[in-house]
Amino acid sequence: MTRTMSLRARLILIILTPLMLISVVLGMLTLRDANKRASERFDRSLLSTVLAISRDTALSGGNALSAKTLALLGDTSGGPVFYHVYAPNGAYVTGYATPPVLPNQTAAPEQNQSYFDAIYHRRPVRALRFVDKISIEGLSGDFTFTVWQDTALRDSFVRDTTQRTFGMIAIIMAALTLIVWFGVRIGLRPLLDLQDAISRRSPRELNEIRRPVPIEVSGVVRTLNELLSELRATFEAKDDFISNAAHQLRNPIAGVLAMSEAVRSATKMSDVKERGEELVLAAQSASDLANSLLALERAISPKPVSELHVIDVNKTLHTVESQAASRATDRGVSLAFELGNFDTHLRADPVLIQQAVLNLIDNALLHGGAQLSQVSVKTASVEDAVHIIVSDNGRGIPPDQIETAMARFGQIEQSSGSGLGLPIALAVAQNLGGELRLSSASDGLTVTMVLPVRPPERH
Image (cartoon, rainbow, N blue to C red; front, side):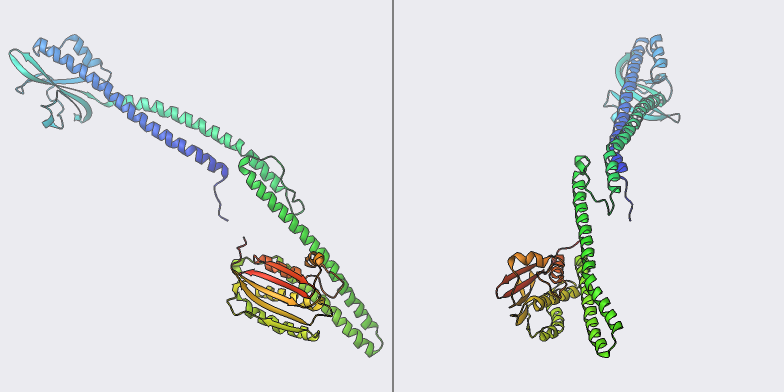
């Protein structure tokens, strides 16, 4: 049997998976926000620095920076800031000799300030190129100021910020995992109690489950209780069947034993022969009853419909005709088969169909009374079903006795029958999704087996 994930693991996975996805999304948003805030913060720092350098350059003619600006260069939050200034004619004014190069040089003249990332002495830096109109010693125009800063400290700031955030998310997820695990465990406790209640059931203990259960599994418990009720009824029916079968077999077996003793104690060959014939009849009666019991057991425990073969009902009944003809002739009764000329194919067990029809014919022969002179077997197609109709002109069954006649081992009067003829036919019809209909009148009895062409699947 294929193993599946436990309900506890499934619930935990269903609950925690979206929480994990939300946590990942929050972490990504936090990282993005931290990068954005760090960039804005350090970019503002670069802008403040370049403005200070521009002011000092204009005031000192490019000769020196003020002490305040020098302190700003060394004490910015992102680490030391490097700078470079050149005049409109491209002449070097002050600062470091080789600044980072703006990647898109064509856009530089059109922009007052441009932030960009670059590599300076094999290290990543963040740079700002700033253009300002100033005049130094008679030279006026656009002076270009470039300031840059190593990004290591900025990356460290982002890393520290996101690590704290991810740490908090991890702690929250760990706490949620424990809460969900304990919550699911406690929430599933009624199911474990239900499992314990089910495990206490046995073939001898099939009482319904009465304990309170969560509303989500009330339907399951209701279905289980229905199944337990059906099983209890089935076992009770089995017990009744075995008890009745033992009771019914006791008489013919006792007869066989009595005849056997009589044969053994007989002193004359004529007595041996006479009692031997009685012994054969008693043994035949016991054998017929045993066969009827086996047929009933087979009828009430059928194969799944999908495992049954498609049969032709008319051909199956032709076999019955040859078997029943001699029985009718021995009783002086006319037996007629009138099989309709139409498609009678359906899924069924041919042996059970034959047994059921033979039982109906035998019932007519045994219980038809002195007025019985003819029995007929017909087939008809009605909508999506095949009807097998067994009719006789005997004395019929009183309406108030039909229920007794349909019961297992039920007999209206003492006879040599087993009392299983109609129950077997009823079980065969019902297990194919059909029914058995009785119509009795003063001029005879008509029994109709209704067999659907497409019987329902049994699971």
